[in-house]
Image (cartoon, rainbow, N blue to C red):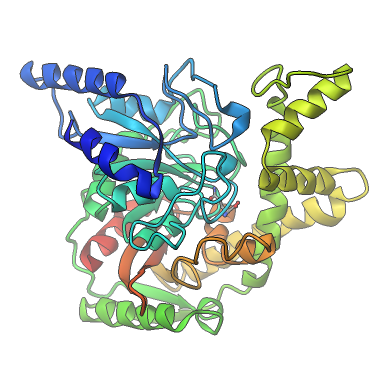
Length: 447
Ligand code: GLN
């Protein structure tokens, strides 16, 4: 009730929540109360949580920030949401996102832009902008986001909260609406690394309904918090740090290095030579997969249906023309182009080859260091509207996040400082496969 009251009072200013259902929330809270009384509770029982609007929960609208799914009520629950429900977590509502998770600013949602709680003239980052804004504005103690090319880590950084993208395959994608299947991964955003570890303990786990879900022993992600960092080798990628960063971000990198050194870590200069190809490779692969995945939204199998049409072709065409926004259409066009006969080898196959080389870069780097330090974005959160005229500028701002998805590696973003005008700046730590516990420990000690 307390959270719903806060949301009622404060959501209008930032537009983090887009779907609320107080009756459902209070009913879930009631069930959590009963569970507490019966002694069947866990640490998470009764703790409220918000979901990015691309996670299905039975009976809740799941609109992915799109007119296409404006009235779609999910008939089933995502595996990760069910895991949290099984512990008694209470759904506060669905939060805003770039349409179908395509974007870095949360400006492309059909339900309007989300504003950065620290400064309403700035974006909260994206695509999980509603997730990060809700947690930063204390309208949820935690929230679930998805990260295809940075969408957990970058908005967490822009809003001064903590977010982790785990190794690909650790959290089931069943029930999370697909953007680019080989890159998508769910993960928590919360105030601290410790809260993220606690949530990850419940979110992770094998699920036979996701063919890329990993079958591996259950881990306790809290286990390494407070392990000493003495001798920890932190890699500093020269391609990330040599230019292109705002003065504020450069200063924050230097402060974080000093803090890590004071905790006993040693810095190692490393190189990630394919960095200049990461953005083109990512946008070719992500758009290719999106163009195939979004074909199901045709007004017949799923989605918006036009009022009037003259033929079957006209029907499909109008359903999609009316249902999708500009950025989604752009991605579908790019994806269809790079997959088409005659261009497939020139673009798609090349991007897949680059993807392998990006992975190889990381494996070579992890022979020299235990974790890699990287900015989350080249600047603090941009002003609303500053990227809208030039989508390529927006794509380029993903330079420090997308490589991790191409390789399937884990990464965490932690608050690390502020810009001159008071906007939060976050730093990322990358780890090798299954290094989540190590990343959470380093992040915990930086807080
Ligand atoms: N900004 C990137 C894109 O638009 C990443 C988005 C995401 O991680 N969902 O594709």
